[in-house]
Image (cartoon, rainbow, N blue to C red):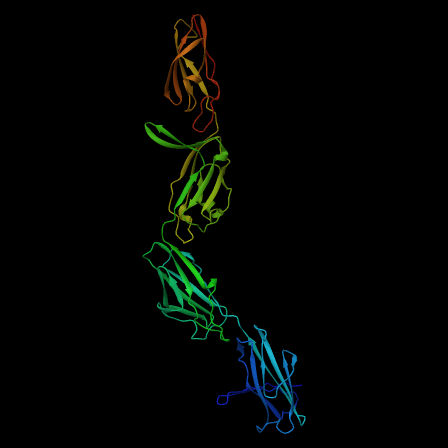
Length: 446
């Protein structure tokens, strides 16, 4: 059985007709819809007005009457009035189909169907930009609607004061940059960020009630209808530091800060950036140079990609370590390179200082005062007279010549052997290593 749809719109009478051919022969009666909902409607009520006419325009149901049968979405409707019907409480956001079957008193038949969609979902829009963090003067944004939104003149941007994009902050829209990517759906614009501000943010929002969809639903803003562009043209700062302990020393009368340790677990390197950066941990590692050992990442991205932590492995027992970073290869999230930073230098030393005792006195002497020199293999701290162990005499003088060299005088007792030693663990070097025990110095006094 063939199918024929017949739709006729008369501007003067506003009559629409749709015919469906049920027989292979030319139909002798026509069904005309004088009223029907639009193809896209936002209302859950639909009103249909219809009439049955012969080819000459006369009423086909006037003499013998007609049998009229109605269906909505495949279900029969009771009753089915002769001229119009009102359909209420229809399911929204889906397609519906109204079917009208007519049989005249003479046995002539025809059928006509009409489909429409009830749409109650308002159109929305999303603003997107590839650069939500930037140091540039200009960024491009895309405005994409969820569906065609062309009613009420649609999306427009005539100038910065008459534009459907609203900007709060040190920025403005360049209306001349408007590009229609897809009519009614997608548009592109340039946002100009003020060069008078070193840093700040621009809040970009789609204006309200700017358009309607085909069903007449008004545009509604959502969270995606707003985007924030952060711009920062300040230098990106790097704080390069280590967990190695620091000590304040006076060397040749000049105060110095010395970093030293004897513990491998102390050697951790920290990189703290003033803003998040775009580089990965692996890329950061490639920018670091160390003169001894290997740097191993022990943490991933911390503090929103602002801190990176590494530890040093495989170094010798004593080494002056220097760590440098090629800061120019690291970029902040705004695209600005990191400002150069001074390298870090520290001492790693796990060797205990040794100590040697010597004297200018002969092994047997009549002199009561015995001079003793105390020489450490490296500078030590915390060495005092009370740490010298003396037997057969009394320590009468203790003088520091340098951190590694000390002079002592021991007053010997009569007819006795004077013994001088320095036990282990009494003083430590700058790295914290305790001294080894000294040799045993003996002088016989007679």
